[in-house]
Length: 486
Image 1 (tube, rainbow, N blue to C red):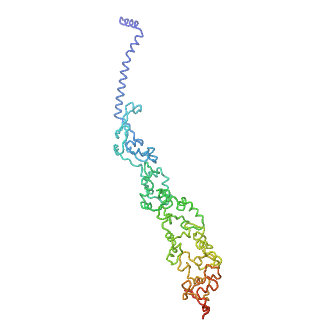
Image 2: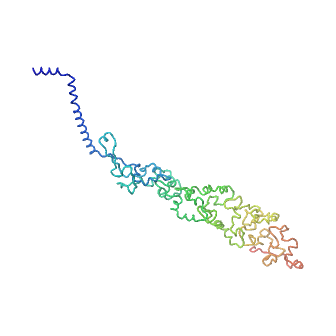
Image 3: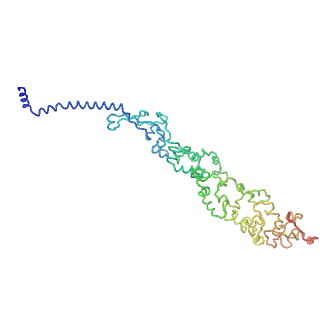
C-alpha cells in the first residue's frame, strides 16, 4: 500500500506538459530509423527490378539515319530532292537495319517514367558525331527496299504513271520493266525530275546511234539543245516513237506558218497525213530544211515515174537542174499539182515563157482540148500540156509525140498535103526532115495559118526566086503516113 500511495504522490507532483515533451524527444530517432529502413528496402527492390526487368529500348527511326549516312547530307542542297528524302522518311522506302538505342534507367526513372541517361550499345558513336557509311559500325542487318522497285515507285506514290502502261500504245522498255533507277535518282539530283544526268546524255546512254546527228550541218533546234523531252515522252505515249503528239500536231505546234497551209485545197499526201518525218529528219541532216535527201532525189523517191524522165534526151531546164521547187510547192498550194501558179490559162508556163503569151492567146490552139494528152483533164482548154511534156521528152520542144504525128492528132485523118513532108525530104532552112513546124509555128506568129513567113516569103526561104520550077510537079498531093498508123 505504501508503494501504491507513493506512486500516486509522484504522479500528482509531475506536470502534464513535461511528459509530452519527453515523448516528443523520443519520436525523431524512431522516424529516421524507420525511414532509413524504407529507403533501403526500396533500393533493394529497385536493384532487383533493374536486374530482372529488360532495358528500355527504342528502334532507330529515320531522323537518325544520317548519323551513319553522313555522305547523304549534301544531297539536301541539290536542286531537286525526293519528297520522302527531304522529309527524312527513310523507312517509307527502306527497311530498318535493326539498330536499337538502349537506355539504362534508375528505379525512380522506372517508377516515374523519367529518362536521364541514354547510350547506344551497338553503334558506339558519341552523341552529336556523324560518320559516313563506310566508316560507321556495321549493323547486324542490311537495309533493303520495303518492296521491289517495280512496285515501290508505282504502287505507293506514282500510281498515275502505272496506269500509263495500260492506257498507252508505246511504252519505254525501262519503264515497262519498272527500272525507275535507270533514269532517276532515288534521293536527290541537280536535274529536273530527279534524272540521273542531263536529258541529252541520259537519252544517248541508251540511244548512242542518235549521237551521229550532232555532227550534221543542220540540226533541229530542240535536238541541238539536248531537249529531247520537248518532242518525246519519258514513259509512254500513243504516238511512235514515244512522241508527245502525232507528228501532224507536234510539228505544227512549232511551225505555225506551215500549219496555215493545211487550209489550202491541194496538199501533198505526206503533209496532209502529218507524216513530216517522211521528208524531214527530226534530229539532223546535211541538207537545209532537215531534208532526208537533197532535192530532187527526195522528190524522186516518191515520184518514180518522173524520175525516169531524167533519161530523156530533152528536158525542161529547171527539171534538168533538179529545181523541182521552181514550179511546185513542197507542202500545199491553191493550184493543181502543187504548182506555184495556176495550170489553167497556162499561167505557170508564162512565168518563164511570157514571150509566146501574146500570140498564143489569139490562135485556135488556145481554144482546143487534146483528149489524147496524158495531162487531160488537168490541162484543160488550150493548155500547153496538150502538146508538151513538162519534164522530159524524146522530141525537140518537149512535145509528146513526133511533131507530124502530134499535129495529126487533131488535124487528122487527112494525110495528104500540097507540100511534101516526111523523113525523105530535107528542110534546107531549119535542117532535119520537113515537118509541119518547118512552115508553121504552133504557138502563133500573128500571121494567118500560123505561118512563119507571110505570102511568098515563106516559100522563098527554101526556094530560089528566079527558079519557078518548084511551082509545078508531076504528082498530085503528097501522102504522109504517120509511123505506126494504119
